[in-house]
Image (tube, rainbow, N blue to C red; front, side):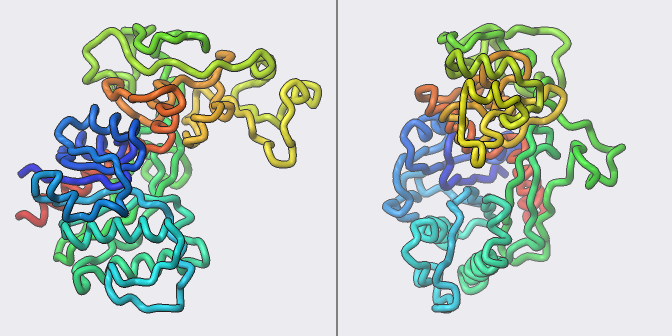
Length: 390
């Protein structure tokens, strides 16, 4: 059986793409940014990818747009709620809960309205890890209480809710995300994906795991460019002795070229500072006279510049890479990462094309769920669905 899912707050589609690689079928997505939705549609041709505010598109209308297809799974990352009215009102229903005027609360509740309408077998909400601990866990506990009130207690949250690090799933990046999974009450439990790669001392069974992927294993085969290069589609620099990760990234790209491999131009002052930075250096590691070449407020911007390390995973790629990229300086070259290099570090395969101007595409990459981590979640979701079908 082919299981269908929809992706709310879909972005460019990292989460969607991972689930599709796991064997699920994306039939719909929604996001408020037009270029982002264009990217989602291009890479998910079977999806009805909708540009709009979820608060203005009720689930009944969304269902019509996707041809009234069955929805077995819902995924998405609604913005983190605050529930500033905790203690004021008890839960009445999904639509009746007083969630204050904070728009993040409204978006969170819109996600749950879709759950309440479609009643999928299982749904996954991703968010920052601090969602579980802010206000001493009150926000998180209230969110769980609301979720478990849907459909008169139809759903249970799989506990303990886990924080996953993408580096444990073959992504060349340390990125931690909370994955809250809830499913209909069954005799079958969802099992979070097990680590496939080791990274730190928490991996007790390291001998059974693959080594972590590094920046070098991720990007060393990509085209050699300079920051004034403005040709998006360029031939790979390497065709032999590819790493396993590079082979995975190129597996569905049957061309000798790859797209989106352009980077932001850095000014001469920035390049001069870059030349003084060793791999792993941050801004405050530099001598004062070097910092004065490109001065920032040093009480705030201690790591305003960071140079990546070839033989380690990258730190988290953020949407801020769309602003200047100074936190993602290439390990050996006097430039910041290209869009494609950042996409590789997010484990987007090379046949995934980003639509928009340079800043648009950087932001799409930075906001995404790493594809291979999403694939691992998708495989666990598919395993759960197959079990309940037996």
